Length: 147
Image (cartoon, rainbow, N blue to C red):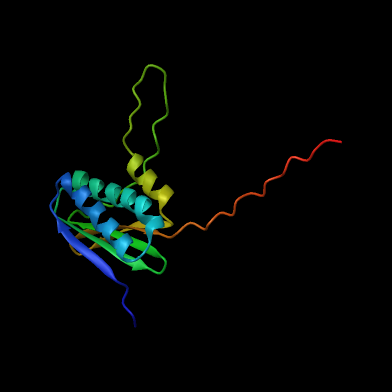
């Protein structure tokens, strides 16, 4: 059985962890020739890591694995509590909009699949990103001269 290539890094629960994880993703995308996934995968990884830093506050293990034409991103931490997808706050006149809860919304929008699994030492939150099909340009209609 062929093993998919992967890259892993252990990180401290520090705000700089997200930047280091984005660099890991960017390097993997360039080496594996997946430039179309570079920006969405960096955004998703950033959100996964920032959530782990804020909510778990434990050491992290970040893994990027080639998944066919796509990527499998994973962040493992030492907290067994699984993440929850929050509904965004409703806009109300005169009340500041609470921007919290957008991270997993962004992950859900960008990823083909995502989820979380409990492990013996905490949990792993993961996302799979696959390339979007190339959209064919719409045919253009030439202006026809009016007789």
